[in-house]
Image (cartoon, rainbow, N blue to C red; front, side):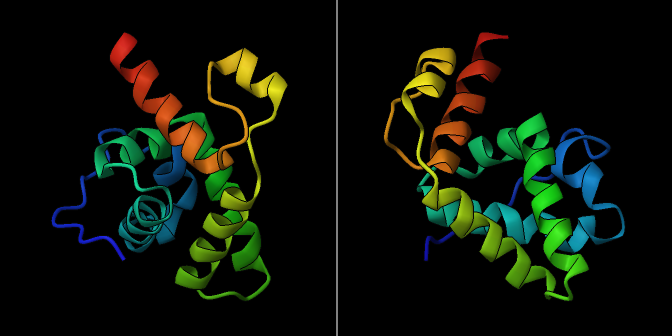
Length: 120
C-alpha cells in the first residue's frame, strides 16, 4: 500500500464523485483517493482531478450501486476500484482520448484527467 501523507480536499465538492456520494461523501472521499492512488500508482492530485470529473461521477455511481446491495462503504470502493482496474483501454478509446491502449481503464482515465486539467 502506498504511503499517502495528505489527502487533497475536493476543490469542487458539489461535483463528480464527492457530489454524487451525498451523505457518504466525507467518509468516501479519503477512501476513494487512497484506493485509486494505490491501485494506479498515480499521485493523489491526479486522483483528485479524476474524482472531480464526470468519470469520477461514474465511479461514484458504481460505488452507490454496490452500497444499495448492502456492501460497506470501503468494500464498495475497493470493489469498484478493482473492477475498473480489470478493464483495459481499447483501441477506439485510445484514439479518442489519446490514452495508451491496453493499460487499466482506471489508470488511463486518471492520467487523462491530469493531462486535460493542465491544458485548461
